[in-house]
Image (cartoon, rainbow, N blue to C red):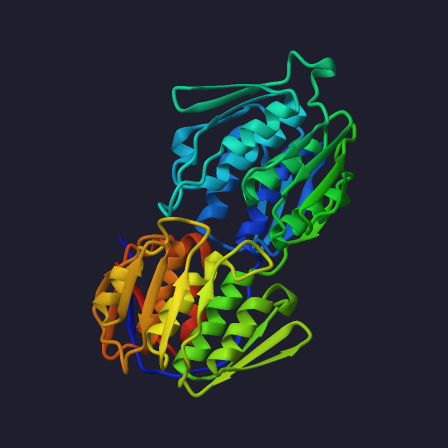
Amino acid sequence: MDKLIIKGGEPLNGEVTISGAKNAALPILCASLLAETPLQLSSIAALKDIGTTLKLLEIMGVKVDRNADKVSLDASEVTSFEATYEMVKTMRASILVLGPLLARFGSARVSLPGGCAIGPRPVDLHIKGLQAMGAAIHITHGYIQASTLHLPNRRLQGARYYMDLVTVTGTENLMMAATLAEGTTVLENAAKEPEVVDLAECLNKMGAKIAGAGTDIITIEGVEKLNGTNHNVVCDRIEAGTYMVAAAMAGGEVTLKNVRADLLDAVIDKLREAGAEVTVNGETITVKSDGKLKAVNVRTAPHPAFPTDMQAQFMAMNCIAEGVSTVIETIFENRFMHVQELQRLGADITVDGHTALVKGVSHLDGATVMATDLRASASLVLAGLVARDETVIERIYHLDRGYELLEEKLAALGAKVKRAN
């Protein structure tokens, strides 16, 4: 199993190009199931989760043609409406085929999902929303079996549905399903994330009629059919934020290209509060730092507040910042698994429920640590960049799920990092 070996203490300087967002690409790839003609996508990152999704779609009969960061998906001859446990167990986002399959073909059999072990992310909101639209759904032997064969014209029916919790994948699944429903669907308490907006923009280019994406009320007027289009996936704001924190911690000057500052307001504000210099110029962001940072308090919340996917990275930064900070996680109940690994590097962190108290230390010391989930992995990489001597990060397959060419990009900035078996 691969591991990363990092020799800390090197400043970071240069430019890094940010990839297309994994969390935007995954639902858009699944949206290809809605189209009767090919969907052409660009800025598709070379990530494990992307590869898993493309393989799943191929098994269903979608013709996939991939060339560098461009992917063509032709779902004109789908032959299977099933997502098996073997395909779904490693990636929770596989649940996103449920809505499109049900909307276009009237039938779906999808395994209950897996993914990062960061706390319960129930799919009951997906199921209840589809049931509100008339779908017949049964869960048996670990599979969600859904059908619209009993409905008029075998089509989902427009409905008003309030989501008890803000759910990104739930919003995306129901929004995709509603595009081909009869009548109008209104999703209340919808997720506002940029990835939801990007999906809506792609669907509208495919012929959907969606209004309100980016607000907590999304209205979808169902249409008879959707066709393919050309779409460039939005930049990965979490990858961008990770490199920004890396530059702040390690010191130096790093310019990010292909990035949107309007998606990173909360991250930029906190980095400036910590003492880093952040300059925005069009689609570039430059972070300049001497590595001497002040501790900042962080509280995660749904977009546009501070993103849970950046919590671990800022905790790593606070570990070597001057002062004491609190990190409060409100989204996932089990998202402090990186704490004990950071402690192995010498971090001073105390956890009480959903709150971590971080006391900055003068330095971290390299050690062997284990990645527990995607963003925890990123926090360990950041800590390794500033730790004395050598840090070895094991089980980095989590990193490959969400960061394209991580070690190559860091090495190009001057980090001493390499992958080993």
